Picture (cartoon, rainbow, N blue to C red):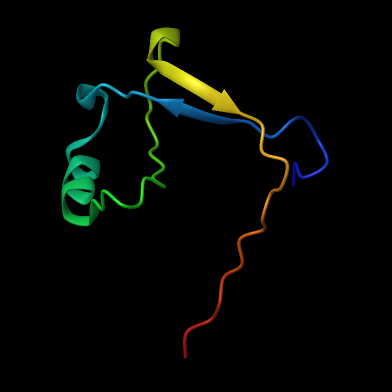
Length: 70
């Protein structure tokens, strides 16, 4: 893992909708919640610098844990 390498960076981007596959657009439409902007998307295109709005370096990184559902 990269937990001890590099500087954690979160980018906030305005992604043009034409870079998203239809299945992602459908999921956003289905699960969008205006009170929760915690959303991550994967794009296979190169994102141009003008689409990056801001970035931050979080001081705490929380490990995601997966709980088994019986």
